[in-house]
Image (tube, rainbow, N blue to C red; front, side):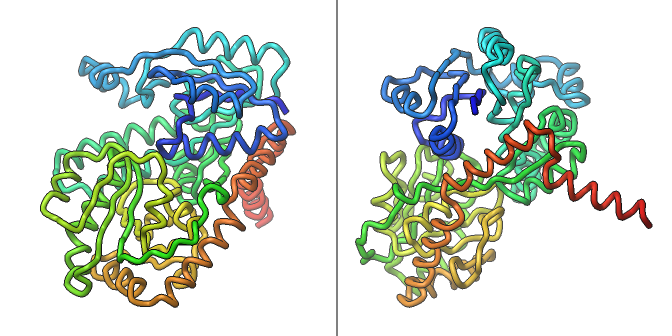
Length: 423
């Protein structure tokens, strides 16, 4: 199959959740398909990144675009803001300028007869959909932004922040209701996100393909952790990660330290915000590393992995990576959206500060429990979350879209309608 991929930015280097999903997915798909990448390029791409992209994509086309200033994105006039609220434009969620050259290239390729399907990486690229009207188009939405906004409203304390995210939530719901059904099929990583999207836009055809993890790359080194290090990883200018880390620092860690004074908390990830650095400043047993080239040595050092997220959406790669590295995991329920878990067997789920502290202490103090969680987590990553298995799910979607078969959700809705008619 010949696949045309349209991207908001190049999916390399692997510095964030977007890249960590896109690059290995298409690496797996490229084994049996010919894939072309057409991408915006908000910043220059170094030679090594281009070489890595060319290892996966037969052709790589990058189109320089300019980052939009905040006032350009929100609208300079009150009338424009009201207009965007009533009927959000296609570029509402796009942080960069529109590329006419990129649009023309998409149109030329889709009219050539060489390609079978177009794969858009995000609903925010809806402005480029008319360029590909000759071919069926699938959108990998990943997570549902309206759900992200809703959860953020609940966990923000400042009234101004709550109001800002409430308005964003309302506009995003209108955006999704207007545009999701334009794609032949829309894919989310989590059933929770997919359910939310279906409730907003019942006309959309929606499927679920979870994230995966490279279990050959993320594999335990055999080194035994000999210090009580609790690890958290993620991009540290992403609001849910920052909120989760600060929550653990201020609410959970003091409880832990009363029972286990030697415990250490390590936060690994690029671009830590001042809010996080300020929360860490008076804590001698807390480390914020900033950017690291390789996460694996930090996983090896840790005795336990914790994911204390209270907001956000989508499936959390951090848990899959910890499982693949055979680390025992303690996480909030929000952190586990879309992941098949067996609490007490491959993960411990806790949500209140006291319960999180108790769960971490139980793992730190019980080597038998650590071993069970570690082994079962690694098995789960291998059996359910390999990138090859996720690539096969996308191939099923491509074949279904090309044959114009309904997706599983559509079949379920049709069956429900038939039953109601028989009554």
